Every structure is written in structure tokens, then in C-alpha cells.
Length: 590
Image 1 (tube, helix red, strand yellow):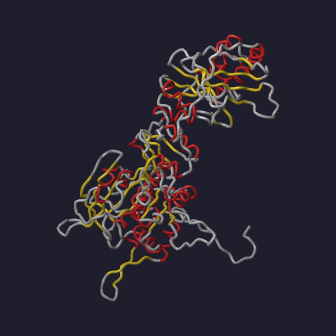
Image 2 (cartoon, one colour):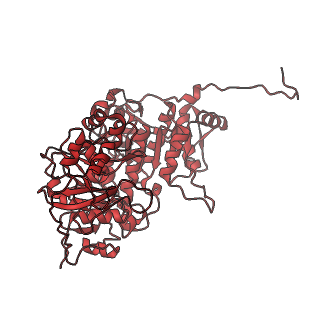
Image 3 (cartoon, rainbow, N blue to C red):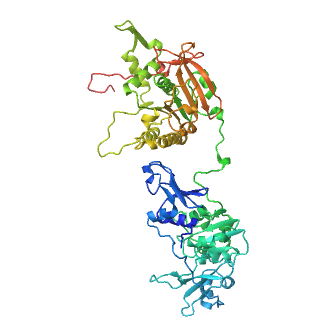
């Protein structure tokens, strides 16, 4: 007989193979492809369609696809492809309620009325073996479970009749389709019923077995709400994760604090009484998602007063308000046209405004980067002009000026050491890891990455490049938000065009989707009355954009400024230097 696809088989397969999954629409996504493992880093690229069973890995280098039957075969997961399982038809005899069953349930806080309603009894041949009959919604006995009430650690404490159809205990006793309360054990569902709740059921074979769900699917989805009252131990509630993921209706759960330190419904009943069980059920709520919070709980922030790094170019600050903390800013421009110079000037502004800075430069030597920043900080009055052998002007700084500048940003500015070679036994540390560690250790508030392609980790295959770029930029954005800092990323455009658009940024389209601000820096045309121009083509915070902000460049100071910019003097010139007296005496002067 051919295999009949069931969505429950997909979930059972995922659970059996230990896969981490999440459901989205009609697809079940694997965190890592079971065939290629996501190449070691690509996530959520593999899915199985829950309606038809088709599966596919979206990584080009893998591209594995087919039907769920093939997936199960490839991973040695046994599906029911032969004759469909035929369950035993149990005799529909009248159940005689025996006294030992009533006495045992009474010891657990459960009344005779509930015992009779749910037809709980004991075996004829052994009155210490409790019998739980499972009747379906048509009041047909489908499943029987036994419990040894005098269990001493030997043998099985609970077991069931062989080849019987697993269903929920208490289906026949449900009265409507409003709220269904699901517990793990039968004693627990009886405890809930004892407290006056009609729609109380329990699973047949414990927290790990969900074969019953397929048999009860059409019935259970009729309920408006499902309330999970599983066993609660070590900060985790049984049943909840699977039912929340698989059931289409609203799923709520008993709050952890309402267990009052106990494990389950019956323990709450016997220790604290009915009112405690009722409170647990009445206070049940939708489980809180770790990555979701109430809008009303969000901090009230005046966007106009957000912490920011001013560029001190009025034409730019008027549009974007400065570099706002929590933002990822993309700076792009053609090679050699000055975007790295513009970036280093922003570093000067950040340092002067008290923002510790970390810089990664994949193209400039560290001494070149430092020299450029030192010139920009020095200003015209501190730059010495000489003529070289060709009669051209060249510029230099006094050693004392460089020393004073270096002392000023000694504990403010940090740069990635491109010359670092890890020991043979040391693991390679990614740029992202280094950035995050630097942010925490040195209180960094402004991070500059120049540029995207050199900063990314090595990509094994060309077809992974765009995905790697998207992931890298996404992680930078998370760092900006997590630590409330500004991250500036430099990236090259993909084509030579004077009419820049966001689509011209080289690489994945996700790059421009994930950043908050996009600035494009370019040299001006010979006919323009300026040296360079800046376009602002994305501004997520206010939506204000700008085209052709005219800028000027000083070869002497390496500074970029606008028409309305005043002469800048940075804080190092007024910084106080602490001096100490040095004596030749061996004894201290006190």
C-alpha cells in the first residue's frame, strides 16, 4: 500500500532526529539543513511543506529536494508505508466501579462522583492495579491504561493494552468546544475535573508521545482555546512547546508561579486545595515569547533627543540629525574618491564628542590610518608646509603635536590589528566577535568597518557570498541595537553611475534593507563649484533625504567641510596635561 502523507509524521521525524525547527505558514523550517548542515553557518534554509510533503534546501551548493518519504528514507526513519495499522476493537462492556479505586482516588483528593463519571476501577484479579478507560468523543472505548498503586520500583508503574488506539483520556466527558484543559497524567486531569472543570483530558503515554494527536486532530481543533497544565519541573512545562507549535488555535498555559512549588495539578490539589487549582487555571495566559514584549512597556523616548554624534557639517546634520545611536549607517562611494577620508573625519568628531571609537580598516595600513586622523585633528595652524624636490607642497606634523594628539585619544580610540597572527592552537576570531568584545571591554560607542568585503569571514563558496553579506550586516545591526552604539559600514558600489540609487551598492540587496542610513560620497564634476558631493538616499528615522550636498576638501588638513562649516578646533588643543616633577634623588621628596 502506498504511503499516505501526514503532517504529524514530519513533526515526529524532526523530533526523532533531534532537529530544531519552527513552523511558518505551511512550512516547517529546520534551523540547519539535515543534508549539508547549512554549510556550518547558514540557518533556516531547509523546509518541508506540511500540506504536500515536498522538501528543499535553498542553498545552491546543496539544493537537495524531494518528497518527505525520501527524506525519511535517507535518515533511516521508519514510516508506515505498508498496510495501515489496525487497532484492536475493545469490548464495550459496562464498567463496574470497585471500592479500592474509590479509596485510592480519595487519598489523592478525588471524589467518588468523579471516579464514577470517568469510570475508574481496578482489575478483577488485582485490586491494586488501577484501570483508566479511554473513551472517544463517540463514547467508544479505544484505549486502556493501568497503574500500579503499590509500585515498589520493580517492573512497570504504568502500562497500556497492546494494539489499542491512543487517544486523549476524558474525551467522552467533555461538554462543549470552548476551552480544553490538557494535563500529562490521568490523576491530574481527574484533579482538574474535581475542581469543577468539565473539559479536562490527559495524554495517553506521557509527555514524549504524541501519536494520539493525529487520531484526535479533527476533534481537538474544534476547541476555541487549549489550556496546557503539564508537569512543571526545572523551569520547564511538559507538553507546552509541542502543542503550542502544532495546534492552530490559541494555546495558553498555567503560569509557573501558580504551581506554588509543586509539580502538577494533583500535587497542588492535595497540598493547597481546590482554590489553588482553580486559581492556576483561571490565571492561565499565553506563554510569553522571549523576543516579544508589550508596546506599552516600551520606553517613551523623544526621537529628537536621542543620543547622537554630530558630523558638524550643518548640511548633513540638518538632514539626518547626526549619527544616531542604535543605527547602522552605510557609507558608499567609488574607489579613491574619499569615502575613507570622510569616515576618518567622523572618527575625529566622535572622539571630540566623547565617544570611544573602534576602527577596522581592511585596506589602509594602521600607520596610514593614524597619520590621516592625526592630520584631521591637528588643523591648519599645526600643519607644517614644505616644498619637496619637485617643488610641490607636502605636509607634516611636529612630533610634539602628534604626541599631544596621541595622548588625547590614548584611551578613546582603538584599531583592529591587521598584523595579529593567532597561535597555532588558538581559534580564529571573527571581526564581529572582536567588535562585540571591544564594545564591552573598552566602552566603544562608535564602530567603523572599512570595508564590507575585507571585514567578512572567508566564504567557502562563491554562491554563499550574498547570504554571508546579509548575515554579516544583520549581525552589525544587532550589535548597534544591543549596545546602543553607532556602527558605520563602508561598502563599494557595484557600478560606475553618477545617478546613485540604493540598488547600486555592491552585494546582496539585503544590505541596504537592513541599514538605517545610506550615504553616497563622490567627487564633484569639473563644472561643479565644490570638491565632492554627498547624497543621503535612505534615512529610516525621519525619512528626510538629500541629493548633492556640496562639500570641500583641504589637502593640507585632510578635512572635509561644507559651505556653512566653521573652522574646527578639537579637544586635544585644550586638553589638560598632568605633569610630575622628576628628581635625581634616591629618596622621595616627602
